[in-house]
Length: 163
Image (cartoon, rainbow, N blue to C red; front, side, top):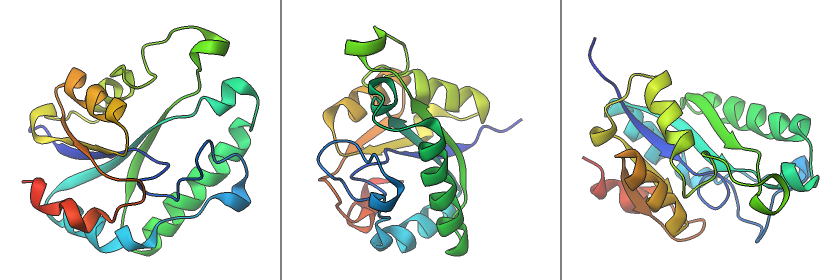
């Protein structure tokens, strides 16, 4: 079976507006619409789209799994209406100050490794786009190509970095 290639996307500051801390309320969840064309182009190049996001606010009790699911369902539906299919969401619900260490919180590679296994990915042909150095560290630890962008930077500006 041929391995697939994927684009892993961090969430806050990459595909939805960064608020400076956690997006705790559905009403504050704002999709960055300037990424539709770039994500469609990446799909057309044969990449599947996955999301990998730290959500330590769950461990802190700042929002619930229900709220997080509502945000992700909304994002999935909005993207689908623009021809973009998010195949999976991976999130780390832990926070070291509240739940101790885990293998999924970036910069650890756990979420990416799960995605690689779940979707039979060729890590060397896959990318992780994030707005923090911990995203790139997680990518490198998983054998994925890491790309750091600025907060809320349009993904169209970095398409030339993706083969």
